[in-house]
Amino acid sequence: MMTPSTLAKTRPQSTAATATWRTTRNRMINVDGTLFAYRDLGPRTGVPLVFLHHFTAVLDDWDPRVIDGIAAKRHVIAFDNRGVGASGGSVPDNIDEMAADAVAFIRALGYDQVDLLGFSLGGGVAQVITLEHPELVRRVILAGTGPAGGGGIEKINRIAAAAYTKAALTLRDPRHYLFFPRTPDGKRAATDYMARLKERTEGRDKRISLQARRAQLRAIRAAGLQAPHDLGKISQPVFVANGDNDVMVASSHSADLARRIPNAKLTIYPNSGHGGVFQYHREFVPAVLEFLES
Image 1 (tube, rainbow, N blue to C red):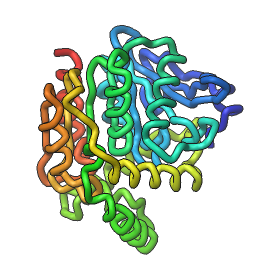
Image 2 (tube, rainbow, N blue to C red):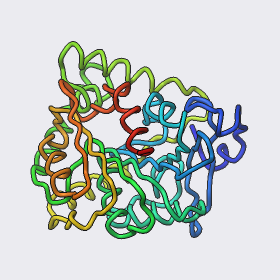
Image 3 (cartoon, rainbow, N blue to C red):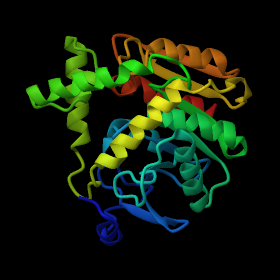
């Protein structure tokens, strides 16, 4: 389990430029009195790509194939936002504050421009950062996410509860049911994805707390019920991606998101769900690299 003290003692097995997600060192940075946990890897050139993760996720929940694939050519930074995993403080119950904390973290690292990759809840955070701090953001990838006020949020608790019940009965991770379709291909993709998440065996992150889960749920519900953002104000290039059968964020919401952003491209992966970008990581990674480098 990773804590601030063990993080400080973790020795790098290789440099950030040559490490993999399995071996890269854990790092901490003080952001206005709060310690934020993060990892980075890839070449230290160009604009870094900052990853913003999903509901209940910590650093170890990023797919190594996605991280390593992108880090082969880009500087990648993934972090635990306030109150998540090994980071200090408490998780706020609204996405605006999550976005403000993410901006404070990015600026504490010394960057005045970044690219963003937000998955699910992280996609909502990425949208707010881009709207509130457009000077900070060059390009955006929004995966498995939709716009604020998109509707259907009343179903999320029921869907999550059903998945967690199935997971308890089958001794599986709930993401088997939330991220992937229950088809032969989807089941194989879920099994492979879960195996990849276990590849890192040393210096693993602290698990998500109950406070964090509850606050994130409140933030997700509030975002679903709030007035929509004026996404027409986003001028940056945006890459929107999802599966065609997302049970957590309706795939139609991702399509609506792409329609409302002036300079957006949309990719919907077939026969996949919320975790479509992980199921199709072999297609998603080169698409991200092309998008970032174009």
